[in-house]
Length: 246
Image 1 (tube, one colour):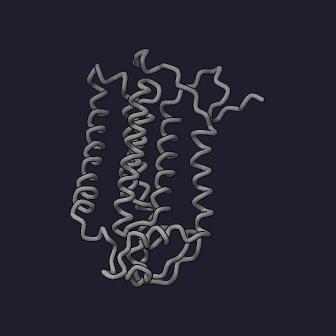
Image 2 (cartoon, one colour):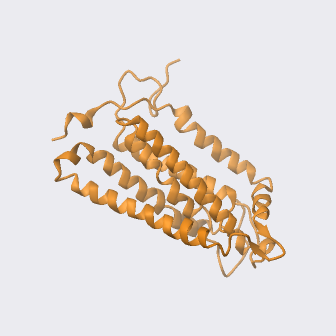
Image 3 (tube, rainbow, N blue to C red):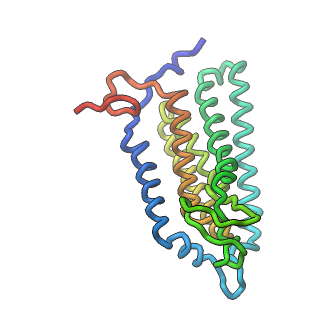
C-alpha cells in the first residue's frame, strides 16, 4: 500500500516556463541555422597551423571530462536502478518508489534516445569537415545530406546528454525537497554545459548540437515526471494539460 507521503499534491507546472522556454530555444536554434554561428564558434577552437582542434590531444578533456565523467554518471544510473529495485522490499525506501522510478526512466530515456537519432540524422562532426581538416561536406540540420561513405553521427550531442540527463534529479525532488531539486537543476545544467564545451574544444560537436540535447533531455524528463509523479491540486489554474483561466 502506498504511504501518505507518496500522495502529496504537486507544485503547479507553469506551461509558459516549463514548455515555453524549451520551445523558444528550439525556434532560436532553427533560426540560427541561417547564420554561421556554429562555424564561427568551432573556428575559435581550431588551430589552423596545427590542422586540428586545440583539445584533440587533451588528456583532461578526453580521459577525465569525457571517459571518467561518463562512467560516474553511468554508475549513478546503475545505483539508482538498484535502489529503485530495493524500494519494493526496503520499508524506508518505499515512500520514494515512484520518484526513484521516475529518475531511472528519465535517465534511461534521455540518454538512450541519442544514438538512434544520430543514426537517422547523419549530421557530421566538425572534425570530419573540410573546413577543419576532414573529408566531409557541411550541411545544415534541415538540409539534405551530401553523399558520403561515412555518414555523420554527431547530432544531438551524446556527451552533453550525460550531463543534461540529470535534469531528472530536479523532477525527482521537485515536490518533496525543493532545495535538492534546485541543486539538481544547477548540477545538470552545469555538467551539461561543461561537457558540451569540452567536446566543442575537441571538435566533436557544434554549439547547437549540445543545446538541442539540453532541450530534448529537459522535455523527456518533464514528460516522465508529468505522467508518473505529477499530481496537481484541483484548484491549480495554470498547469500543463489544463485550461487556463481568462
